[in-house]
Amino acid sequence: MTKIFYTKDHEWIRLDGDIGAVGISNYAQEQLGDIVFVELPQPGTKTAQGDEIAVVESVKAASEIYAPVTGEITEANSALEDAPATVNEAAESDGWFFKIRLTNKAELDGLMDAGAYQSFIEGLA
Image 1 (cartoon, rainbow, N blue to C red):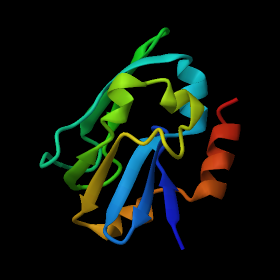
Image 2 (image 1 turned 30 degrees about the vertical axis):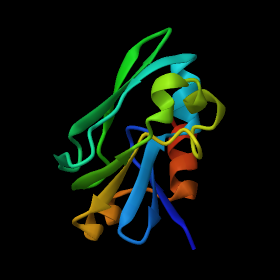
Image 3 (image 1 turned 90 degrees about the horizontal axis):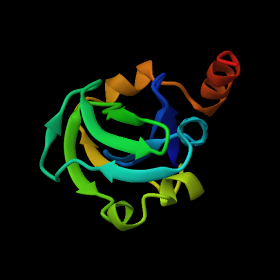
């Protein structure tokens, strides 16, 4: 079963073994509005949990994307460079930003599951 976790910064990570696909939540893309540009990390980049790793720009603002876990970038979703609006259309599926090989699965314990994240964003209203 695929597990998905969320951060308080509105990133999600969907695990497949020790590799996680990372993107921004549907809530985040709604707050940003029309996404016009993404800056993705290079495969091979090592990052720590909480580090700025990518950038998303909308017609309203630019926002940093933070690594939800420590690890090494294994792949970037280069399709977003030509079609950044995919993030608006499918934020939690085809609009993923990068994949990361986790080096410390225990960090997942500090993230929220879908139910906890839903309660978190309802509390923001």
